[in-house]
Length: 190
Image (cartoon, rainbow, N blue to C red; front, side):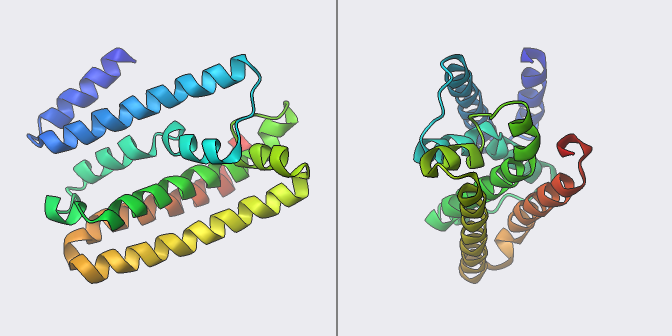
């Protein structure tokens, strides 16, 4: 793993965009720390509360470093002045939620069959509500609410920044859609 991360960092560094390298390293740091959080929860058989889970799930899915690499590969980074818009951070958070929660919904049946995984949105909602059916509906409602918020944030960024942000927005939208399409067809969840 260390060799792989070293290789990725060298490749990013080769593009001579220090801000991108910083974003990638920061995203990987958060991802690795989130994996430690998951491991500690598993060791102590702890199901986290919903708010904590939602916050940490954004990192356990490795969405942020993945989007950074995708933007770099597509040369899709908007100019720094555009990335400073607080709406950008909101959009990235919403994209992470949608990508990770899609995975949670589609993987739940298989993960639950082997014993509930404490690191799934439906599991933590079931723990909170005491009702698996209500948790499934709540997960779908949360996803749909986030999707609406994502589309609104995307529209706002396009209205405020125009085509300068379009490649980055397209990559996020494609990640969300690809996650959904892949999850529906993946034998992994059968």
